[in-house]
Structure formats: structure tokens, C-alpha cells
Image (cartoon, rainbow, N blue to C red; front, side, top):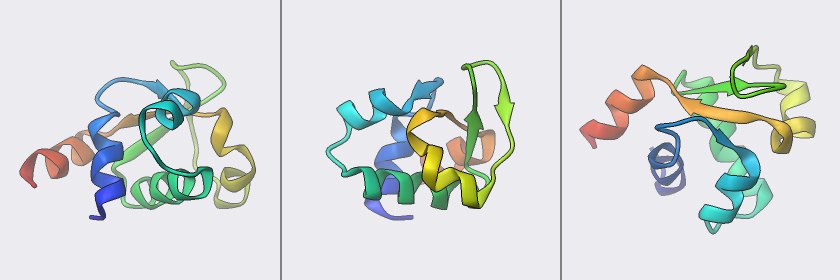
Length: 85
């Protein structure tokens, strides 16, 4: 797990909107979306959209275009991995 991915999981113990992640972490949009996408592919992060209570199915093509509109939350597997490092 990269340092960016670890730092990102650290922020996702609760549902968090993309703009909040952006303001908390010192990552570019490209770096942040890439780290989110890597964690989602591993099953460590869930996407919520259009609101913080609705699960959204990951679509690789749509993700790059809409990354900044989603909410995110670490999965149980993501929290276990994060806490074991």
C-alpha cells in the first residue's frame, strides 16, 4: 500500500466527500483519484452517490469523469488492512 493510499484510508473511517478529502490531503486531483481508484479496486473503499447514504457501483469509465462528485467510505477490509500496518 502506498503512502497516499494509507493516508487516504486514514480519512475514510466516516463517510467523506471528495472536496473534504482534497482539502485535508495535500494531493493533486490526479493523485487523489488514482489512490481512490486503487483502493476501490482492492475492495478497501466504497463509493456513495448521489448522497452519503446510497451505495454506488464502481464503473471504471465513469469514475475518472465523476471522481470529484462522490462520497467515500473505507470498507471493513480496508480498515483491517489500515490498522494492521
